[in-house]
Image (cartoon, rainbow, N blue to C red; front, side, top):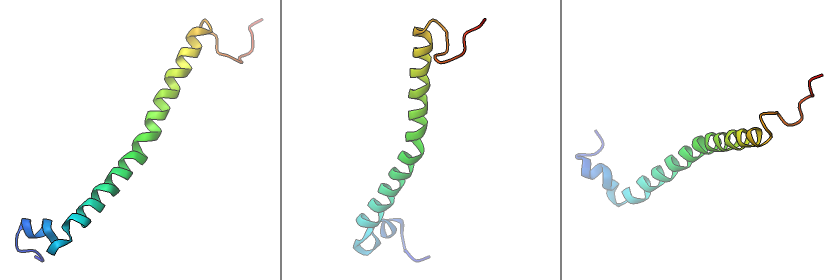
Length: 66
């Protein structure tokens, strides 16, 4: 193994703070990229549900029944 101990792996000869912070920033960006669209979709569906409720259950823009 390259490092003799876990502490040496975390320190990486003085570069550990930079390396591990880069990993954390990258992981955070990936989580945001995956989480943001799902959150936006849920918010959109809630807003749409509210609009449908306010319109009396009628879907806006739908053809009227004859």
